Length: 201
Image (cartoon, rainbow, N blue to C red; front, side):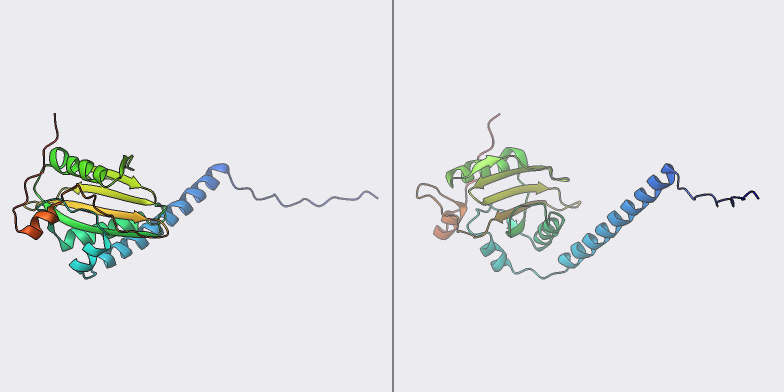
């Protein structure tokens, strides 16, 4: 008597194309969730109150560009940008502040910081791409890194100057060399601050 082998049901298979589509869909969903979370955090940060004295104190001696005016909106924006960099910077302590100024970014503002930060013992270093910045520069000394960014303002508004400080495990006060004069020195004496020296062509 011959035995009859029952037919096995066909094995269900998933095409490679469908697997790729599933993988891309999952990746898009993860990215969408991450963007939504960051967006909520940025919105919340833009609603936070700003204490000018505390913000300036948190810079720990980073010089402010002459005649630049402290601005609440620019400061909130600088904090929001820090949220986007969370996890990308190898620093535990960060602080930032925003200002407004009409001076030329590449001819006056960046050259000012090139000169002053060098006097403070900092070296100019490579900066990561900062989308939306008109001009930017970074300076480093040990575990302290200072980033200077100039971003365009809204129509009819002065451009924004953002100062961000990244520190390692500890934060130190940036001491001004005895032979260096800063805008604060002029203000303490009641003398008008001279304009920044334009860059040499």
